[in-house]
Image (cartoon, rainbow, N blue to C red; front, side):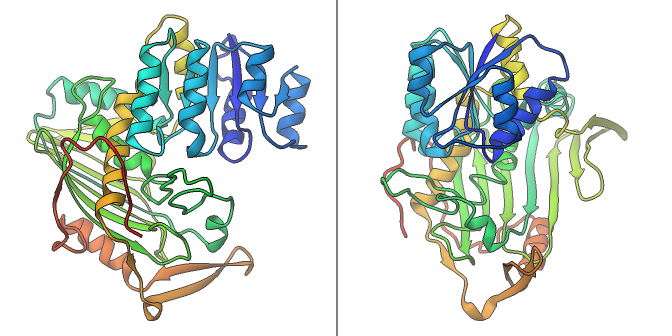
Length: 394
């Protein structure tokens, strides 16, 4: 099994750590890695010791070699073209989330997949975890009955340095005009909005689809896009999804989730314990930690290539999150937080600041507890037939 790693900085380092560890002792080699600029660090040194050569572009790699699997951890703008290139060489792909910048790019990737002998997985690692897969099997079996309302909240404060860590953080589009739409809902906490769609899918490898959205988006930091998002989503099966996320609170809240069903509930509080629980007829079920073995998504792609079809998050399963994010960006204005409502905290040895909105933590936690969004007067948009991102209000 031959692998090419695309991108070895940032999240790419986490990918390499997982591949180097290889806990299940799978049989594969890293044939090469794609990095536009040379990196002289422990990762590049180890790759060279393994015989993996550096290539400036993915095209350069294919001129000399072939891979059975490509692991793509490059910025969002490259997801679509790099995935399509890999598929044209019949290379399977594990592409980091989100699937692409726009819905039309995601469908272009799906069309290329349909014409290829290879497949694509999207890197929402919870969707490959034993915890979520076993939970989803129980939902599909009818154990919990029909879903009624799912909600989660994640408040992860991020400093000014976080938004300056690369050229695309917090950007709406790049210098070439490509839609990035990087935000709290499309990057750090994208997993949690996707996960609610995913567990409601009508099969192990599918997700529920949004019918209507109602969103509030806010900007506190000096960025193009928003850093706080609250949304009410109604799925095509009329299940309510509530999603709360922010980078602009002074206090952290690790993921809380509360999924209500007619016969029971599923819940977690990662501030206390990294474990998801279910409750049916008074019985408590422990599903375990969905963060276990983060690179299981890559290993499951290897297993799928070898004939065990465990690619649980294909392109179609990832599009509902992207569709929602595209629609929020297209139809809702970003509310700029007034300067007098901002607070500043020294962070990281006083070398950077944390910008936060006064009272936002309390407002978000209260809204989550009461099952409402921050501004209920926000318009409700039907996105049933929405399949093309066209413009954005800035």
